[in-house]
Length: 639
Image 1: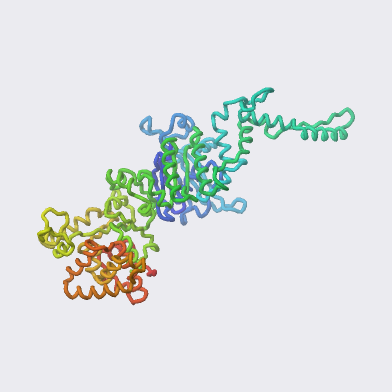
Image 2: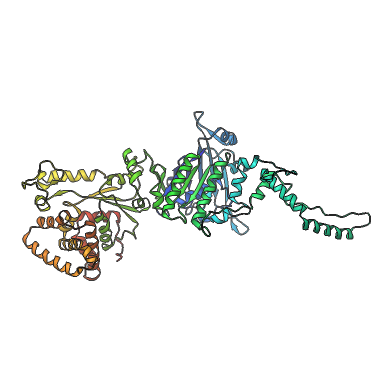
């Protein structure tokens, strides 16, 4: 069986009624992702409260667990796909549907706020009953024990859990192993090969040898001698020496001996927290696989704890594989883009605004080909979008580098406002955007997503300037690029713009198309032609500047003079096309140019009197609109 659905009301950040929280889990792995305070930990804690955990920790309801002024908490857990043995174990608590296969186990935890106190602490009444309506019988202790989940807390002490002593996880693994329970001799006999003894036999041999040890026997005789002096006439006083636990159940005798074992990784020196966590998770999964009667549900908060990025990827692959192969249900919470980049979208739920949004097939507007594409290309640099308050998707390095600087100068710092910028490198902009579009328009993720793309319609003068004409100086007939004269009128051009916008638009995803041609051309056309020209020249000489073969100031002075000269000779479209030609025909890198331009604008903002209002007027309108969309309220500029 597995935990299929859960409903939460008035617990922590989740309200009641229409504000109640519903979530559907996968049979195997379910990963809960989202920004801080979205409710991920509250979901895990609700499961812990309703089911209990194998660590036997007493997890009580506190005043702070009640949502605002509410006085009643309700947590409903529904289990599906029960095996024959599980149906037998919970037979009196089951709910029967219309078909013979529609048999579920539903339990409802109800907690009521109380004004009473117990031993000076607030005391709240808690009851767990079964049935879809919560009117079925209350779970007895044995049934609750079978439903306990295994829980790995975020700041877990893996070293302590693996060390010898009572509660050792390694001892529990060994004690549940069939071979250790059944193979080998249980009693030592004279002439018996010690290697043929099982753990129980070794325990009994140790007990026997301990009682026969020379010094122990000698001290017993001394004690008996002293007792004889205290005895009355005709009374014989002698002590009877035994070993603790030797008369206990066989499983306990085995466990006592096994708990003497330590388990550590074989590494040079003492293993660190990350290595201990790997060992801890491996042990927990083995325990879950071994115990057929237990609830095979593992809750892990932040499995990335103490692990370096490469190890995080390996752990995530391991958890997904184990969940599938060993029929174990694993629910994790994570803040790691490393983990999110390798988790299948079918296994991921975005928790946002106290709601759960599955990303599996059929729940989003992603096409089948989109899922296949994202499985290959949604890497760690892009997976940060799952944890953002809003998302900006761009198609190139220049936008990725420069736009955060522009937003900061406009008083809308992306870092401060939780904006994730995703550079798709010119491929798959719509695929990433559709992650945030639901198949059902009534169930929308309220995360603003702005997509920035080029109009890709060049002015008629540009082909000759950037070298797109044929050898005869004529515009080629068979070409993919377009220019203004390809459109009959402004209405046709506007329809082309709307076509680009509507390709991805919908719900909270909005596409912003460049005003004219490309990002760089529009920067020049809108009001930054000289700055862009100078930075393109700096990009051309970047290696020489870094190698100190040429001074940066000299390049700026020469570029400024060149710009003044060509500005006098050309119209606006020719000038901006000539600047863009540096990226097409010259040696100017768009990314390096963007770096220089970001630096130049920051310097102007800090030392030359450039203001947010002035910058807003000289930037392309579509860039300003996109920034305003992902950061709708103006904050204090951080420079």
